[in-house]
Length: 512
Image (cartoon, rainbow, N blue to C red; front, side, top):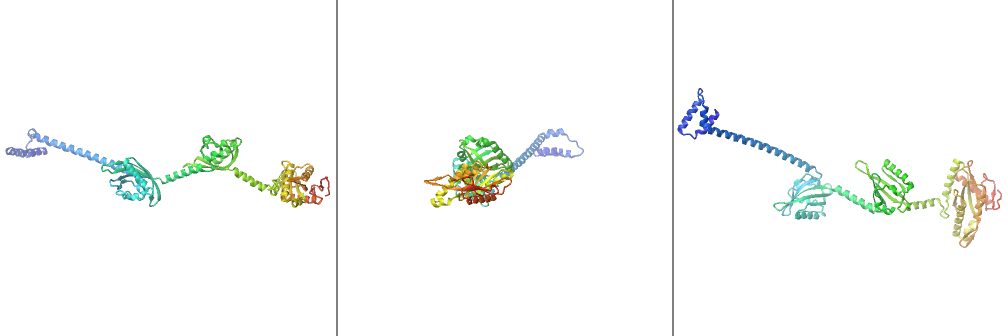
């Protein structure tokens, strides 16, 4: 019914007055409740109008569907664009440095059309602070580096080549920082140049590089030998000082274990000791003998420390090697000064007591017997008075050497001071050795053009399982025996009363 009304309305305007009257009659007829509508007549009369209306409806429906589909696509695209924008924003805000666009205008001014939030971390400036004018950022560049930065930008703009630069800035909160940036330029239609780039704070990296450079400089310039091994203790590098110290070239050593530098008879034991210490304590320090390429052995002091990874595991070891030959020689000199008499080169008073202590300890533990002979030169003072102290010193040195040549390898000769000597004779057999001592002292000594003759008074006491007092007591007993020998006429030996109650002179007899 609605379709008929629409068609009638559409054609009514085109009909003649007669047709209009007829049309109104049809309408009236259609409105009568008891009348029947002839659809065939309607179609014949209004089919063009009906087709037009249906076509219009179809077109409108299609347009509506297309518009609806277009809106859906637009919404999807807008959603995708927002999602990409959000991801890009998250990416640019969370990279360690800052992403940016930098534009150099034709008039020479510049600005940052885009900068991520990292700009504030690096420069202490918000992106909106430089979106129109970049001068505030350039004010942060260190004055000594600013000319080079500007020159690099101009060169990149002129040649259209990428810009790379590392420079310093003065950050308002963190002070002096090192910055590194890279960007690619493109020329715009208005003759401006826009760079798309990335910039980051490399302060810690710069300091690490400086430390590496310093370490490398120290490594090569050090007068101490330095060698580096991998985690398996195979040599991976040595410095020049180490090469000079050992006589080996760097290439001769790389890939080898340090044990190649040790004497063959000690290499295995020392290598095991060092490995055990590194495994237990992580480091080692000690003295080892090193064998030069020439075969000569010399002492070194080695200090080994690990280089650890982030998990605390050793990746390398660094050993500092010091040649201690001179130190050892000095220690020996000091030891000689501490133990030996400076004039004669035999044991001094301190060494006499130390040797007596060791001998007494041995006697107490094993019962071994030894004799202590204290000897005092007779008439030594007149020699000094007549010929001078230089001759006297040479006489003492000659007597000391004779005594050393007289005793056996395990015996000891020392000087208490002045013209007093002490001999420790292990397990002496009979009195022959004491007679020989007197004979050696009596023999004339030629000093320059002077012939000097002296004799000696010797006091003897014994230490054995039944009598083993301390060193001081033994010296006291021997000194008493010396006094008895001098009292008996000199040039003789006398025993401590407990040992032998008599004295012996040149002829082998004497009074107690």
